[in-house]
Length: 241
Ligand code: UDP
Image 1 (cartoon, helix red, strand yellow):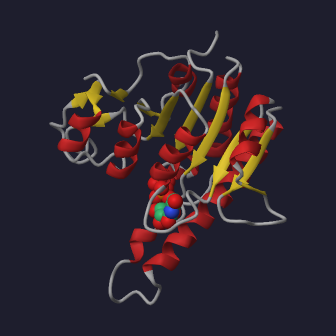
Image 2: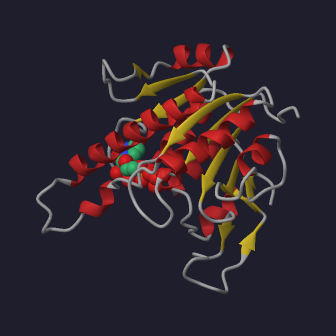
């Protein structure tokens, strides 16, 4: 099967690497994600991954006055968490024969390459999966913003966001049984309803440059491959509703 896209930016939530219902890194979860990514790569696409770190730490956890850790520090800790995830996924992908590079937005000699756009492009052209870690390198945003930013600068055809629910709903489907599923939404509809599955800032950036976004469930086996093949899984957010 041939990919519908030449180049894809795939954002995967950190919790995809955690044990079912738990936190941290579970090797069987990492291998399951790696299997799906490896499968998707058979379609001949160029793939840049942005990994979250929410399975380990989110900076926003440290907002209370009682916390002795400055929120900015906590965000840097969150960015470092994404690097741990990236290293785990890199080894799992390499063990399946996928050629990969981890590139970090915070310089970490001895651990991974620094993120340099032109170098990232070169890796993609050579068919390597690039795993982009440490988000944007700046605090107070999330890896959704990093994914939007990188999708634009790397000239991706689409931003795919792999998450733990089917797509975009009118409210959190894990808390509200009446939540309405949206198969398609315009950027404006997403933003005006203040939907929370993805950062408003990230969606705004994509809207400015007309970068389509597909939100789908990584827990359904084969969904990552289906999304890169251009199949209608999850929710498509674009300029048309
Ligand atoms: N983070 C940050 N700047 C970035 C990307 C991430 O400060 O550019 C921090 C932020 O605290 C975030 C944490 O890293 O909560 C982990 O990323 P995220 O919450 O996006 O992970 P996910 O929920 O996708 O697993």
